[in-house]
Amino acid sequence: MAEFTRRKKKVCMMCAGKDVDYKDVETLKKFTNEKGKIVPRRVTGTCALHQRHVSKQVKRARAIALMPYAR
Image (cartoon, rainbow, N blue to C red; front, side):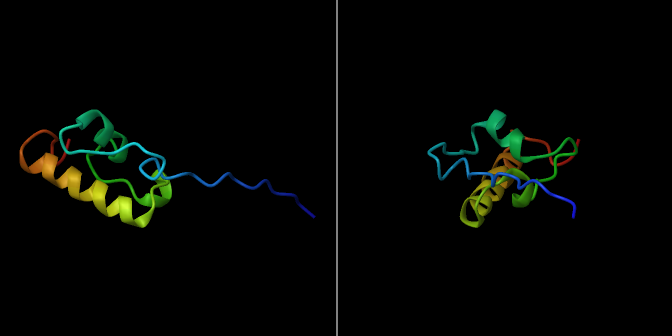
């Protein structure tokens, strides 16, 4: 039988204490890919509550031209 290794579950960065704001563009870039799309939570490791918060903050940053809609 083939053995497999278990991956360590990613911990939500915001549940651990780091907050994300629309003015903090460098942190928001971690949640978008090179084309400017919002990365899904299975990749980033955020919980559902905070993924909704992140997407709202990214959309706010895009609306006031702090982040581009597409690159």
